[in-house]
Figure 1 (cartoon, rainbow, N blue to C red):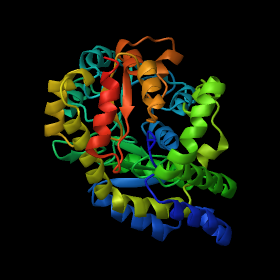
Figure 2 (figure 1 turned 30 degrees about the horizontal axis):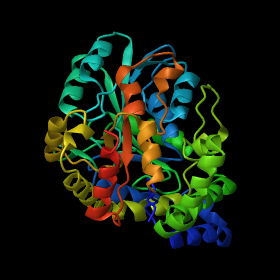
Figure 3 (figure 1 turned 180 degrees about the horizontal axis):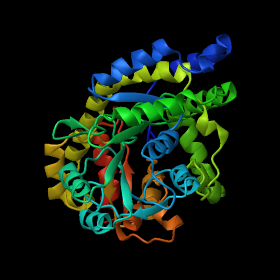
Length: 417
């Protein structure tokens, strides 16, 4: 059986039904009603108590609303880790803010802590956008102490780390503001949409005022997102992927390698621009809010399953397991002390291109992070960020792989040691 790199976390029938529902009841594509929003807040408050919540169409919109609410002035500096979607840099450019990039570390994929302090010393830095990566958990004690020491506001992007915890406290509750993107392949995927949380009443008031002024969602846009999700869901189904999609991709890889690279590469264009499309400023829709509630309720069982798959993978590594980590010792400490959710299971390899090709030839489709290194767009070179693209790949995690399947994958990987 061929193995895809990822999956959609709701069933095909649900996507098919939701697509049909938007035609039967077009009001589902309108702005979410107050009752649904209140229910959504109630569900979120079980994980994030004593927080104010706002709901927006995209994480990029939440980021925009955050910077406006914090009164980050034009010409100010914002510190950020380099991996995020390109629209985040467009938000920064649109607001006339100067991004300063701190390198990542290759153990927990948070910031390089020495590089972080070096940049935080600068007096012009107003806030730090911390984008957690892959479901791994950085050392929040260090980060919080540094932000407090230099009087810099922490903003958390938990899009890849919903459900992760540091010392039994959920990520998203450490900064002044946090936001989540419920987009395709995320643990909580609601046909896009975003929620923002803060403990600051004044910030919440400003974000809510911004949210209330957003326009009605586009029915066509919502339907297009649902249809795209449905297509992905069908293609990533283990039987369809194995019998149809993988043979197709295998043929394309041989005949049209550029098209193959495009099909398996990033879906969001990598291009700097200060232009912000109108759809960034549409409200979250009723059907997105409804699905957010449903998927949030499933999150704990999904995380339990994901961590179990990661455990099976770790048990399958055998000898030379330390090769697959920048520091096996640090990984084990983090794995035991914090709640890593493994949105992606990251493996260190000698060369990502060679390993991906070898795995694909053996019917295992995987990849590297499709997030761009935003620092490169500003002509900033970061050693570890570059290394992440060149030497780290995803290990597919699926319930149907099992011990024997993981052992086969590691055997293939070790053949290229």
